[in-house]
Length: 70
Image (tube, rainbow, N blue to C red; front, top):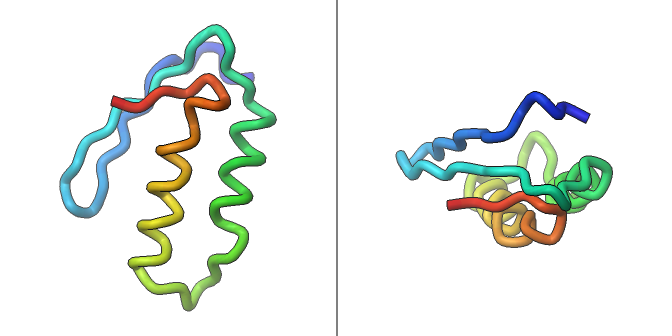
């Protein structure tokens, strides 16, 4: 899915820039599952710190799905 998309630029509120790249082992379904797992404990009242940590967990683990961050 989304074969035309190879890179995503992620800019945090702190101004940090990450480049996410797909490799040949990219697994869309597993990436969505990880994203869901990272966010499932969050709600509209979650603190910015909790949201930030959830995003860091996704970035740290996304290589398991064939996504790599620089």
